[in-house]
Length: 184
Image 1 (cartoon, rainbow, N blue to C red):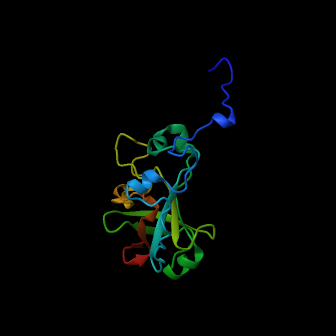
Image 2: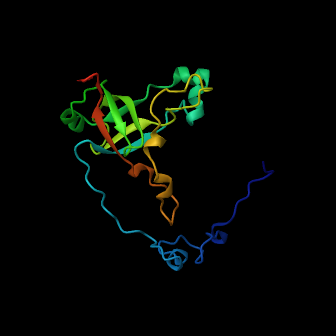
Image 3: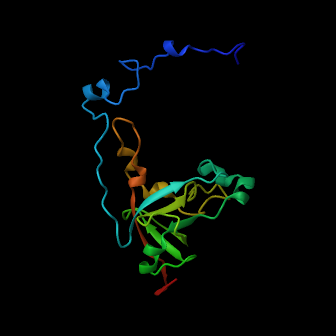
């Protein structure tokens, strides 16, 4: 804490750039061979059973370890896969159906579908923090699907200028779960 407010007069403020101002065209990025503002690159339109995977966290779960906490585990929402009705219907997926989600052949998980218009038709959404495999995490082990296992290799795909990982560019395949020769 401070004894008094430390106020800097506006004319003495300086942004830590070469010009001392906010830079749209950055000389530092130019010298590094990077564009200041990268040109837009349209993404492929996904159809059929292919979707972009989005993930998020509820207020009760900060990360994977939170789900093993007894009180937070009771409050934690069920993990569901949000999917738009325009895409769910052709795949034979109804609200509450078990679906398989596959991240390029390396990992497949089973999760209940939540068919909702509140998701982009080219994307599916799930909560992060599920799918623990550590047996000592008795409440969380085996509960849900691990979104990070579907994002294989995405930590190595990043924006060289800003450092952001391309995790939301993960493409997954979704299908209605088949058990014992019949679809569920």
